[in-house]
Length: 408
Image 1 (spheres, one colour):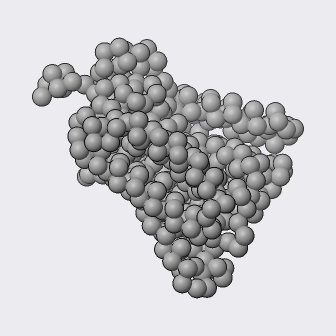
Image 2 (image 1 turned 180 degrees about the vertical axis):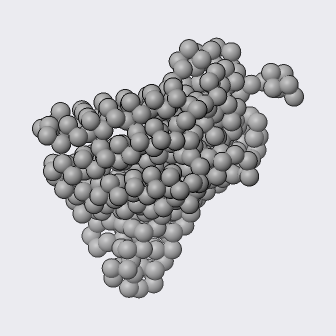
């Protein structure tokens, strides 16, 4: 990121520290009970926590200033979010009362923050305040609602608040697809626009948290007595290189393009929702299941699902970040598509490889993918941006404004 635009504040980073606890709890949930049921439960809980975090990212982006009142609001929010993180384990077994009530309180803080700090932006602030109050009521009501209706209430609550915070302009999105001009998404009301640099940086930092969980799970497995010989220490090194390659794919390629797209759209909420709030959710969760898979692979006698968690997670991550799928004269699109399909099938090599050997395979595979992504992006930056937008299914997915439109 360059020095333009709003920067992430210290209090936002503190709030992220609380979300670190939630991420660790979700990974632990899968590692403790390695089964698809645990993965689905973790995804559902991650979904609710993800949109809670997005709410605070949007709040500071539009209304944030490093002032005592706002610092206190973010610090106040860290308390119910921390309680929700600890309540993940009982929530995974169906006892989600504390989890739901904690997230209801977090939304009350969001509503209060928009009401207190929204002076001069009354229509936007009032809309979001009402949505957060409604969302808080639904989360509170869900505590007394039996399964599975409880989870339906959570989904409705998130839909209400997310639509208010990042309202979509579908008419403008259709114009973008028709005219290939991202500036059509620029909000008419300047208060609706997001600071592109701050928003992109916030999501990049959250991915850093999840990449950190890959490192933590690998290190924890080794620290628990599994790195007792040269092979054990070597595979720990391989796991660290794997995490670094995952970092490279996003921060060397996708991060810069995501920022550029949001800038070209004038900080459009429609584009921010499509590329970041929705578009980053599955790649972010993919890092969590990669972390669980790697942690299990470094334990004694890892279960079969560990192999699938790792390779499927990598496949989802590569698909979600999108840069790996760019068409390029250097690396034909069909070749990369075949490599991506093969990524999802790497676990079929389980009978042929030891767990350590499989980690080494994943590391080499990911390093190759990172190298291909780097070559594609740096080969033709302007063309890569056009292909990225053209390949995206998000609202407003189109080629960037032509040079004539940009007045170059």
